[in-house]
Amino acid sequence: MNIISQINTIMWGGPLLILLLGIHIYFTIKTGFVQKKLSSGLKYSLEGGSSGGMSAFGTLTTTLAATLGTGNIIGVSTAVYLGGPGGVFWCWITGILGMATTYAETRLSCLYRTKKDGRNAGGMMYVLERALGKKGLAFLYSFFVCLSAFCVGCTTQSNAISETCLDVWGIPKWVAGIVVALPVGLVLLQGVEWIERVCMTLVPAMAFLFLGGCAAYIVLHASFLPKALGEIISSAFHAKSFFGGTVGFSVGMAVRYGIARGLFTNEAGLGTSGIAAASGTEQISPEKQGLISMTATFWDTVVMCAVTGIVVVVFVLQDESVLVEMPAGLLVKGAFETLPLFGGELIAVATICFAAATLIGWSYFGQVAAEYMGGRGLLKKYRYVYVVMIFAGAVMPMGVVWEITDFINMFILLPSVYALVKCSSHILR
Image (cartoon, rainbow, N blue to C red; front, side, top):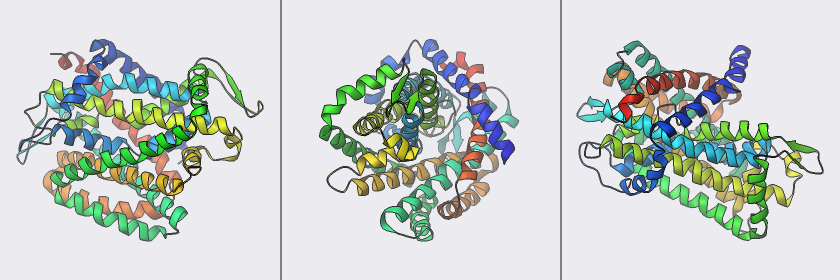
């Protein structure tokens, strides 16, 4: 495990972040700054579907279900804790640039999708096989998507739910594990139609709940808002000291942790958004679907992470000592607990909803990968294992799992970036 940890520190500490940021900038230029078509993507996302695949809103919410996870709460909190207020700015910039990569990977996935039992199926595994003839690499990509589904999409999320239930309501972890595994397992076993329906209901509800709490906090502390925005912008370009100079942040720290948390939360470049996008109805062109999926990165990072970041910075400005006295991942929780009514319960429910949505969204990514590798037979086995892993994740220690997850994601990222670069000319065809 020490070897894996060392590899993660080296690769995710610089090279892979630089690679991802470079890809985001490349496709921003390559597509002629496709982000300017955001309004069109938002409009298309409300279009209906047909029997030929998921609706536009269904593909969007399924993608958001997977990406709007606890990283939007804990990840942003740690970005500010480790990189200072400027980390919020760089996280936001990463989201804007990442929209172009999401557009590219989803449009490419739609171009090379195929039919599985009468339904559309696609993703980077199909791009690698059908566009580049790299079937072995496609199988490897699918294998690691399945592993990542069991780790980042399953065990880490169920653990976040069980930890929250134990902390807030005193519910034993094993009880929480069973309570979560049963309904999620039911949704999985019913197939893609149920996944789409649940995501279309859960994602807007949890976003409204969390953003409502953030808005209430900002309104109650509106006097700190101008200073918070000023700190976010100024700290992105100038070193800052807090808590009497005890805590200091450099520009390099703001850039590193802001970009890292932004990249991890929206998953642009991993190719996973293309899996949901390719399941969309053929009535929507690959270009339109690319624009629709691009809005997922906008909602995830440009909106949700930015609002969360403002809440955290306002909380820190009220009492800078929290940077010393409070763990990195609990700043958002600390802010919500100061709300006059049910703040602690609100952030607990929001955390559970985010984690549950990721459980369902990532389960679909793994299903497509499993079916690619072994057809319906392997797909059925995958679903049963996934349900078991939900319970296992609720009761097991997470330190090792997070290290393994970071290591696995490296083997998802590299084939995906390879396909994106090799097929970049296909994207605008």
